[in-house]
Image 1 (cartoon, protein in one colour):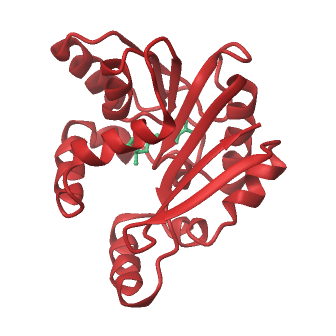
Image 2 (tube, rainbow, N blue to C red):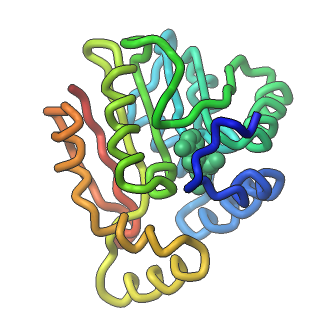
Length: 214
Ligand SMILES: C[S@@+](CC[C@H](N)C(=O)[O-])C[C@H]1O[C@@H](n2cnc3c(N)ncnc32)[C@H](O)[C@@H]1O
């Protein structure tokens, strides 16, 4: 199942699948805990019972499973087979229904206009610029009329918190992330065909939340 992976894909993401949740649990401890953080995201996207929900770059599926708890019909896609396996195991353990499949975010083999809500959380920064643009075009194609989408990802952060944050990113992320945090995502969303966009900054501007629709 590795033939879909483009050259830029960081294979170590696939290899850390078994410890990913523990690492996220540690990091989010400082902002009130992972469960609270993740539930807030799903709440802000307004995921409700009966919605068809797609999570792109779903990793171990934590957000997808909260959407499933809300009664949504859930599909999570990612390139990492190990992440997808962990996600499916978590769903089974919790007795939740969700489909986890391997797709490239740039070329998702699912039907046009089939989702009410689409989320990409800490996935966009993993992609080179052209791939980010392709992914946004895929979100546009996959949303139903009246659907809503959301990006949660790194922000620019300034001042003293920004210095600490950039130092942490230097050790944990690729140099391309330094470019990503400066990107004008609103401009990119408009170029991808989204006209309604809103952006908020959280946690000392280390995170950006973008909600958008065509
Ligand atoms: C940092 S993790 C984020 C996981 C999860 N969304 C979260 O919020 O914790 C990034 C994920 O993006 C996936 N990914 C990277 N490039 C991808 C691509 N082109 N298509 C699909 N998934 C990709 C990786 O395999 C990884 O699981």
